[in-house]
Length: 134
Image (cartoon, rainbow, N blue to C red; front, side, top):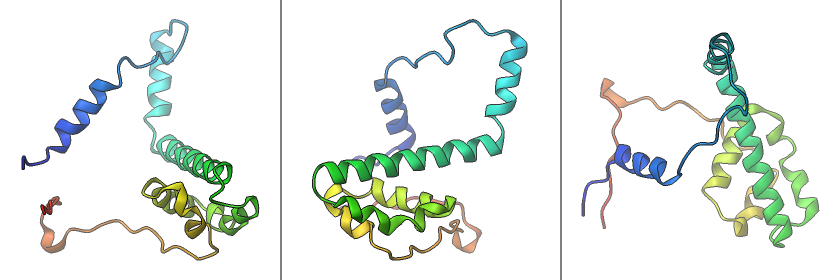
C-alpha cells in the first residue's frame, strides 16, 4: 500500500473544489485590501471564524438528526450546557463530524465531555503520524 501523503491529498482536494468564489462583488482599493488582511489575519478573527464553523456543524447535524427521526426535538436540550462554551462547542462539533446522525442520541445526552487539550509530543520529538495497515 502506498504511503499516505497528507499534503498531496489536501492539494488534490483543493484542486477538485474548483474555482473559489470572489470575496467581494466590487473592486477593492489597496487600502481596503490592507484593512481586510489586518482584520482577517488577526488571531481573534480566526478564533471567531472557527467558533462560527463549530456552531454551523452543530446546527446542521442536529437539524438533520431531528428531521430524519434519530433525535426527538426535546433531545436537543441535553446539549444546552455544552454548547454554551467555546470549548464545549469545539468538542461537540468534532464528535459530530466523526459520527453519523444515527448516533445523535448518544451525543446529545447531558454528559460532560472532557476538555480539549493540546497534544504534546513525547521526548521533544517532532509530531508524526503512524499509519496502521491491516
